[in-house]
Length: 316
Image (cartoon, rainbow, N blue to C red; front, side, top):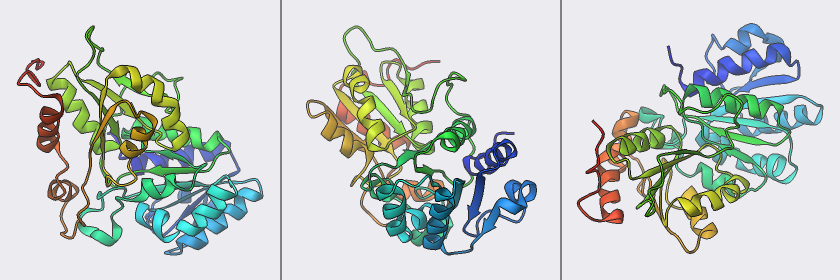
């Protein structure tokens, strides 16, 4: 049974800790009583409750002592409530702290606006020097946790809540820092390249290229500034028009930074708008309220690419 990214993280970290005694797991009261790390490594598992700033500072102290601390809480609390500690300990001092931010975007659904995070990538990007990963599916999430555990860089790993997906195929030895490209650029050039960031966005893009194989899909797992700079040349040759699909606000989004990196390209975004998601509902219902979904995306592609031939090369 495919695990959600959040459950894959817990399981993978517990497995890695069996052979790495320096890994420590810190939770802000959302790990559940049956957390696999807590069951398997109780002496290295700490539930601090709702004390996010203290959690980041504690993790920084452990990192200074040579440990590899993973601290998990809601994305909204990690990136916003604890932002000063993240900025100073991870961005400025570069401490080897791994923040695993579950409930990214509006995946909290019924938890409401206070627990939604549509600004977190913009906040963390602005601090510099922090790796930002938005894995898609169980396999990619596990790979990111593996990469974070052996890296000495600070990490911000954005996960959803309970969504469970099969990751896009990636060679076993390939890093999640490598951009995945699906589709072949036509001889005359692709009319559009759609770029997915995160789980819901990647699922939408998978559906789009199944319906129109003339559109190229580039999947980005890492979206920190350094990673985006490394993708720029690859993206430059895929198409003159790029459409970034991301469960985030337009302000400070991945699309906004790619537009700076690629000034001669047309860079668009399918995002969650600038409205506050004030009504509770399921993840899908909140996304629909914000105008993020397959039908709005198709309409946006029709507007950008133009012509009635869009989606005309549907695969059957």
